[in-house]
Amino acid sequence: MFNTEEIRRKFPILDQQSNGNPLTYLDSGASSQKPETVIEAMNSYYRQYNANVHRGIYQLSEKASAAYENARKKIARFINASTWRELIFTRNTTESINLVAYSWGLTNLKSGDVIITTEMEHHANLVPWQQLAAQTGAKVKYIPITEQGCLDLTKYDAWLSPAVKLVAITQMSNVLGTIPPIKTMIEQAHAVGALVLLDGAQSVPHMPVDVQALGCDFLAFSGHKMLGPTGIGALWGRKDILSQMPPFMTGGDMIKRVTLEGSEWHSLPWKFEAGTPAIAEAIGFGEAVEYLNTLGMANIRQHEIELTTYALECLNQVEGLRIYGPQNPQERGGAISFTMGDIHPHDIAAVLDGEGIAVRAGHHCAMPLHDKLGLSATTRASFYVYNIAEDVDRLVNGLDKARELLTK
Image 1 (cartoon, rainbow, N blue to C red):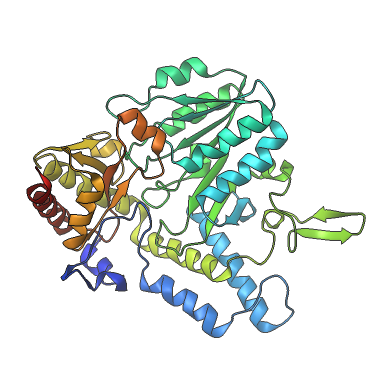
Image 2 (image 1 turned 90 degrees about the vertical axis):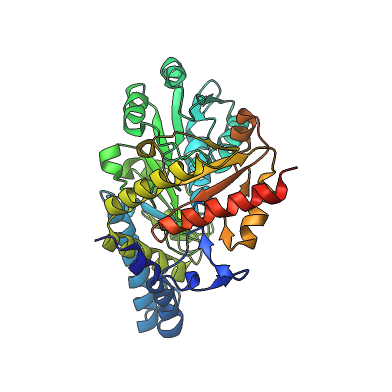
């Protein structure tokens, strides 16, 4: 049973007041809260076996190394990787995408090649490709969005050719909530010989993701958006591709042998993990996916569909409010971005904060998308495992108050 009230009790931060009101946290799209099990796993490392990994021939180091690598195996199983060696620890989704851009991209792209992405991407899945194109002479094409916030796949169909070497696309938009038909798009890309990178920052925390079933070539995601700590993320890639890619960074721990004449790289995944890693964070990340497994990703997805259905019904009744993205909860995630008449999104967020409601306001690291919508900013409420219908009710009441206070 998916008992949200019981789940909420596992998150210490939610048991507090904010500006004299119960904390209503609706910004999990930016960063999720952490359950006690994650916090305690990291505390246990620092209190009981804090040592560097892969280096010490003593008990503390061996225990730390085992915990670090066990976390890798947990996360690899979580996305159904064929082997744990395909799971590389990074700082976050952004670093994972940059790793692909600078390692695979600089090695394989040339003038005339094409990268396809979309207008609804987070900057992390736009800027690296723009920079890569500038350095290699490749061209970036952007699949446009429709008025409903979906992708105009007629453009995608028309652009696919042997010149396309990479398709880099979000599996769930952080602004519109849109879930594109990823599996079909992957099959189409592979048919012309292109690789596919998925930005899973929003999808992996909220729905079952199976890289083998999807058939993608790379998947990037972050721990802090899926109940884990900040400063840790992952890149999954197909072993045959990763094996051919040069290191992203060089230094200690990613080498097998170093002489004054040159160096020999370590095997996967360590050749991409130079220097002392984020050990406690990796352990916390592993504990986070264990907790998500106990809840069940299919259950989490169903909970969010039900909560998003209720939120869309309620928000559509708020005077002057406009929601961006698909209206069908089955076609979107639990991030809902909106405007309310001429009231600036920052002002809406400030009033909501006064009511103890935490939302995000701004361009959400998706400026080209907001430009396409003719907006400078939106307000975004995003839901997760610990949110309940009462959170939606508080949001609606807070928006009514914002309209009363801020309407001229």
